[in-house]
Image 1: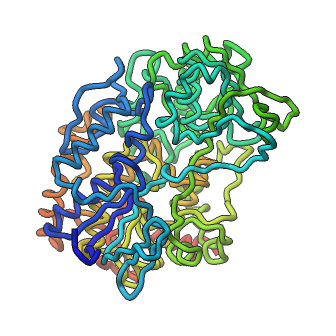
Image 2: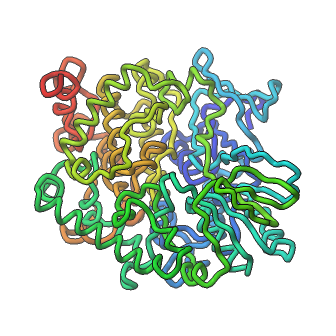
Amino acid sequence: MPSQNDYDVIIVGAGWYGLIAAYTYLELAPGTRLLIVDDGESIGGVWNTERIYPNLFAQVGHGLFEYSFYPMKKEGLTKDRYISGKTIHDYLQSFAEDFDLVRRIKLRTTVTDARNVDGSWILTLNGDDKTRISSTKLIVASGVTSGPYVPDFPKDGFAKPIIHSGQIGTQIAHLTSPDVQRATVLGAAKSAYDTVFLLLKAGKSVDWIIREDGSGPLAIMPPKLAGLVNTVDIMGTRALASFSPAILNTSGVWYKFLQKSSIGNSLTKMFWRSVTWMAEWQAGYSKSANTEKLRPIPSGYGIFWANSGLGLASVPDFWKVVHAGDLTVHRTEISGFADHNKVILKNKDVLETDQVILCTGWTDNLGLFDESTRVQWGLPSSADVGNEWEKLDAKADKIVLEKLPFLRKNAPDTETPYSHTRPWRLYRRLVSPSMAAQGDRSAFFPGQIHSVYTPLVAEMQALWGVAYLLGRIDLPNQEEMEIEVATWCSWTKRRYLEQGRRHSYSIYDYLAYVDTLARDLGLNTSRKSNPFSEMFLPYRPQDWRGLIPEFLQAEKKKGITGNEFKTLSSNGNLGNGKLAPCIEVEDLLNYMGKSKVT
């Protein structure tokens, strides 16, 4: 470690995104003085040893949850290829060891303040002003599931333990012990489903509380559709992606037919209705009053909208255990806790409990930045959206609805297109337009996009982001970047409803996102051997093997005809900024005030 705590690069987070960012940086810039800091006790981020537990499985099959060049061992798998938490942790630990990252990682370390001072990043660690480190570059790879959100409830005389779902790994012995006979679970996210399954499997009685007026229960896909084909394999095909109205996929024959024609829109609706029916039939919601309360909304199309998120029953016998267990679902809220072991519900019911688990989600984990910095750089904040962004959002919303009429024709009645808080405002979901426009290439923020295929997205984000930090990728001007940002934000709100308002959600559309980053980098996006495979076989990380050598080769050819992209400079002429052609810049500029929208 450098003696004066000075580094070239500091990475916050030692999970999927932080580890591959470190590897990529060292590949492109050998000899870089690099440090990774993480507040966990072990390597792995979400998959560190403190947070994994038995019966915790990833929602992705083996072969799909790995970096392109580093295969995962075939161990700890279900019969449907879904991967245990321990296998994932061991994989990330081995990755860090094999690529000499362990000595560069500082665990049990929280960054409590980060400031950009005179071209250097000054980081305060663990709230101690005397413990500061500095670097030239900063990569914030802490993701969106590292800061637990714990609501505050009245606790008048309540004596039973209350934990967040992120603590289950360290509390597993107590949760499964005879001390806990009846447990209360709050929330409707995937962590709540995993927690309920764990408790029921251990023979506990469970009261599961889900708000009546929220976005509803999670939409759950089965491990295999119709019991025949691996669900996540299907989700990894371009064929399925074509049925999802995506703003990064607005060209080509499939788009024109499925998304721009009335017949195609009807087929798209029929497709999603059929998929939802299969998922709900396999879940068996109608088997009891309890499970009926778990049916996702909007009714009949919950799998398409993923209003409360999309999950997968990756644990063996998930629904069998849920149907057979001692489970009571309450569609209400918790008002508070009282009298040693009482849970007071908003509907006036009172429950007795031995344990409370709050599956209430996560914060943005950006407490290291002050509010003014968040507003300036396009990070989530509690500040008002602002007039300029409101104008851009409104115009971008018209773009989305014109390009993807399915979202207008089939929007649920519950939809509210705009939020009054600032969402993530990052170009390509990675960099601040205002920072980039000022020539400040000192930071990027991987990991805040929601996608099933985390490792591949992380790998592509790392290459794009490191190339950006090193000045080896061109960007458009600030106006064009902000147009791209507003269009994405408007699309994800329309496409994924509540999830899209809170996050950069891109579940069915990850291939279009990966393609976009690849085009920016000059990489080939058609990785299969023939058109049929390209469309109908699942894309796997191994299809993208050799990304860094391919990028280096593309750098040598920069400026030569072949793999150039249509871009616009500030004066409207062809320029050097590389905007992927998925969103036609000419159309966006027109909508932003040139001709079509006034």
